[in-house]
Length: 125
Image (cartoon, rainbow, N blue to C red):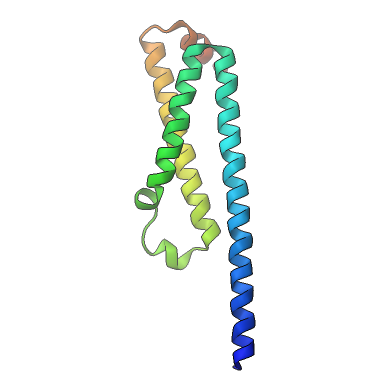
């Protein structure tokens, strides 16, 4: 290969990395926006539900920070694309937030919190 061909391939690779970074940032911001919007709706339902939603938002960010070590094997970086790894990290963070939110809701309902009990009954219907 000539040096010019190698340079063109390198420029295309850098452009594709920038585009992928922009796409993943947009998806991450949209996902975060949906989680915060859901928390705002929970605050409108009751203060207790809003606090549980706030715990879920915090767990989402913590789980996303730890998702590389918790949900990805070292070979995933060699076999999967950058976007697949991003989706795995996002799925791990969303699942952790949903599990913690649901668990805190069930614990509150078992302890006799009326707002949590009414919310569970509403969701079951």
